Amino acid sequence: MAAPSTASVRTADATEAPALAQLWTRSARAGFGPLLPDGFAWPAVDGTRIAEAIAGFETRVLVADVDDAIAGYATFGPARDDDLDGIGELRSLFLDPAHWGSEAAWLLVQDGCDWLAWAGYSKVVVWSFHANDRANAFYARQGFRLEGEERALAEFAGLVAWRLIRPLSASATRVTAASGWSTSASSRRRAT
Image (tube, rainbow, N blue to C red; front, side):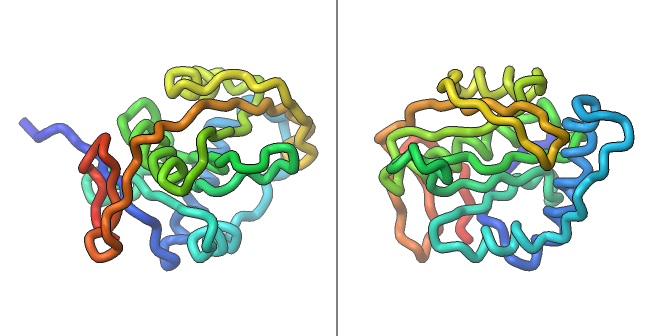
């Protein structure tokens, strides 16, 4: 009998941007496709924005690996909304559909939120489509609650997204750059 698969989380490498873009395409089509009208024109994604986030000073892109293969990624940074000064944002979370329901998404969110707390943020927001029941149930299990703001996204055929928010733990601690980073809550991070 094979050993169960376990996920690990690490910082993304710039060379992985094209692979992460392909993962975005698979995940977005599987997750958002049923919410969008027939014939929706999917945007071409080449990894440029992901590479910019990886290189960004204020952002962190994390990758979840399962059995030494990329299972998903998440991007974190300061909130981009003008009314959210001093609040962090889970900017993107995409898993290969084969890994939906696995521990990979949970680990990505927890590690990213630990990093945001270490960076001084006390809360984190995420935008999620109102009709995306799977994602909204996941975010609720992660402690996110409706914040009150919503907007229609023209680039996704006018689907309405709402802003969710949760507090961050103040217990995150930074480890030396030579050894990678970790938090007091866990030691599952690998050095980068």
